[in-house]
Image 1 (cartoon, helix red, strand yellow):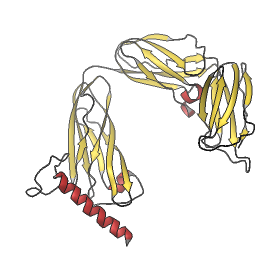
Image 2 (image 1 turned 30 degrees about the vertical axis):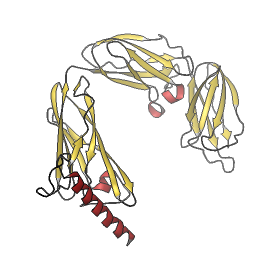
Image 3 (image 1 turned 180 degrees about the vertical axis):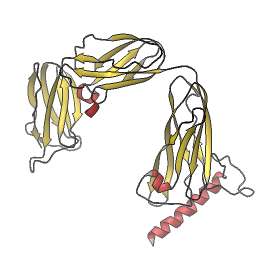
Length: 327
């Protein structure tokens, strides 16, 4: 019975909200609700920061009306909850796809604040992008925006790794890469399975210098930077290598040996430090250059005692593993 009351309240609130907005297919333009019944669905596109770009894709966001003809409270995807499907199509290059949807849910009023995002590839010239929303009742709403691509751009990608082939991801090393030239860009290399891989998009033609640098420790990349030209295609395999070695261990619960995921671990040396979290197996991992280090686990939310409290090591040309802790 309570669910029925919630559903009825949500329908009533939705109808009142539509009436107060005055309808307005395509975004709610404040029409006369006496002479024009309110629609049951619409979609809007937020004004983009710029309608002119050299990038090969553009990120769009907006809102979609949650039709009072459907209410799938309160679990599942945004599309399952709202019954609204949001799609995009670039009329210029013919590419199309689904938008990513998010929705907030309240126990009393049901879904609200229905948002969508889409990354749309664009071609040279003017691109007319149409975003559509549809609901189970078959009601459709559309909105469109023109994006002008004024010049070519390309991608620069590669990998940062140790002399042993271990990827130097951001969370394992604190390293980021900067690209300086006609356009200055910064990227952080991936961590985990694709550790060390980086990619910089929207790079116009020109001469560039790529430089890796860590926020924590000094990595002796050789060369310390690379300079190259971006002319008429993507530049790949801009790889850089530095002497660095794996430091890892696991954190488990002392009572049963179960892994402790999401535990913060800090590695420090000479006043500089870097932190990472344990994964679902309790494993933490760093890739660092030679030198003396201290490893210390920390609990972000509780005053936890770890055994040992810390471990001191010296990295010298080889990996160090099984630096374990119990909590």
